[in-house]
Length: 440
Image (cartoon, rainbow, N blue to C red; front, side, top):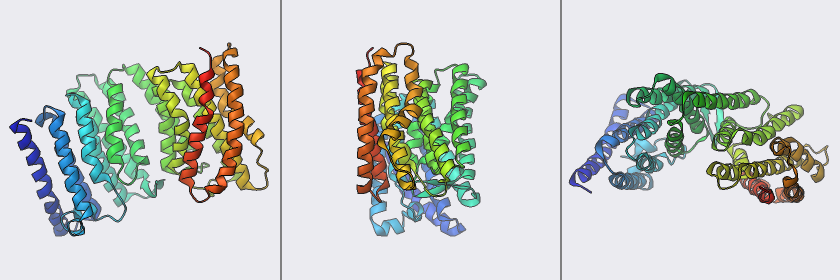
């Protein structure tokens, strides 16, 4: 590294060391809340990081800076005297948060991936810095409408402010520096802000400091080359999925964060592969709404993000392979269909078992899963279903066996909901492996 790089690294670290006690003193002097002090540190660090493209020419000094900053913040977390003194501006909150140790590595990863393209760094870090702070402060001060997120909650008001500021953080730089027309910038801003708001809405314990910048970077990188009609189509698809989960929230047992996660899963399936891949997960969600409404279960259960993670484990590997061209799209579509059919069969067995006055039947659950969640994907093999027959037969047998085994395993995982959801996700993925038998 050059002398200039070393000086800039030392200057930024010195600013962090001096800034923390200064913000602590100002917070005590003016009676600011713990959350305001914490977000002031967040904004100060973020604005400094936004300027990195004008300060550093290569990623190495940024990675060194990230390592030094993370080490310093880690010491402040672990040493009680420092935590309650110099680090109190960051650690005054009672809830567990890893945000301060995830912040710097995320910034370095975005800077590294941007390869000198200023917009790919400035916009994701700007959203992380400004939108996250604005959403947290508004939600803390004026938030009334809460929704579940992990072990805690977030507010609709905070998410709305996050959405508005994230749009501005994307739209203004795109128009000013991006050399694109305002319509193009408008579509990118709307899509990026909505996805960032949803990603922030599902993240707790400070993991939004990792999910938001990296997610915005990858999405923005893929949106920039698209024309306005393609962007408009993606925004419409995102709007439809978000409308579906919001409309269904009155009957769903999923928490608000889980509903946002479900919408993100559906959008990812549609964009990474194509729109047909979203049909099996949407079928599972609609069946879930019908069941919970019919049996009035919305106030009985509180299913969190791990329920969506289980479905992601079953279908995202196939979606990613389809998007990368590793396997033919129809083969991957069969894999998603088989996984979602198995997932729905296991859900049906669990629901009937809990209701008690219904007798769980693995064969019935298997047929329901395949008719509701399997057919929407399998139909796209028309008119040549012959190449699918062997795969379907093997997958049906697998679904029947796994549905029976999952019901037995549920008794052993009583009280460990997260592990049970993860187990069911891997079982659904295992049941989808016969899709590899589909003939090209």
